[in-house]
Image 1 (cartoon, rainbow, N blue to C red):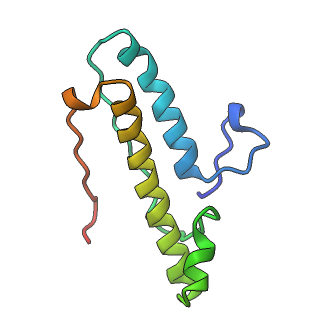
Image 2: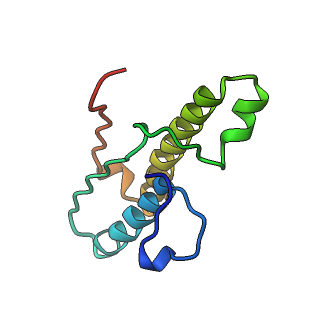
Image 3: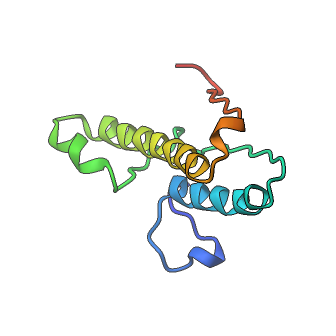
Length: 110
């Protein structure tokens, strides 16, 4: 689950959350540029089993003394948080944030 392999990302070592974020931002380019309404349903696979580390964020949690599984989980959460931040930043940079509704929900609780 953790490693994405779409054709355009072939050969890159990229975590699935980051790959999905990049694809979402590409999908938003045209409607924002054309000033058209858009709908983006961004469904992260994180944070679900299997717990696979997002290497971009793992080391600091390991260094903080977290159990290896907890460190992987925390890295996945941070990757998902970064994804949402990247999407919000993208909307702000293109002047679309003020006219966009963002709903963030969990599918199975806390």
